[in-house]
Image (cartoon, rainbow, N blue to C red):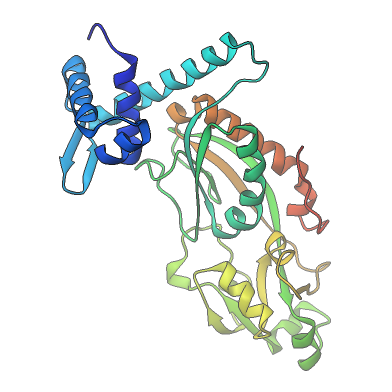
Length: 308
């Protein structure tokens, strides 16, 4: 394992990220034969097969995954060194980040703020996965995620990001057509929109059976965004995150002083990913954004705070 050529690692990273020799060649402006030859040389240098090759492309082997982690750390270190050598006051970060989040939080809170992060760090390419399911960090679906559940395993780095509030919401038109709601017992006289019980992805995911098992549900969906649209259409009430209801037209909270439902959000990453400079920068930024918007997430204000 001597005489390593950093260019071979750079080619290896491009091939691993694109999962294609053709796409890596296009990205690096090299011929595909050069990409293949340099990867074979790297495999010879490290003494291990790094990719399984098939008609579908390139897939990292176990040895390839281990090397990928180390090569990314080298890439991050070289990026810092280049920035310092150029006399820059601010560290220029580069590489890719894939972050997962719950559907509503990722779409309506995280995504708007990530545009500022991308402008701060133009060398970073972001993949954002706001999905109505849990993402498997152990299987490398994402580098880091914002999760509802704090992992039980000690193999992850975990930080509490903050809390958010949920309230019942309806349209003014729906409330005008139906019996008046003065107390929580009056919820029994109304139609509700909820999650699908057997498709809940987290114990922390709110659904009506935990709160009011006898409430009449007229529609169920795995998507909280779809639920918000059903409320907006005047179908009934739903328990929604305040940050989602704030950006959905014509929704009003119902009994906000008598209903108090909160959930926590957690930043999670494997330790080897968390130590990458670009992941640390994203964590710091996300925590700063969440702290600045604690009142917004808690439903105390309808105005988001933007970092400069």
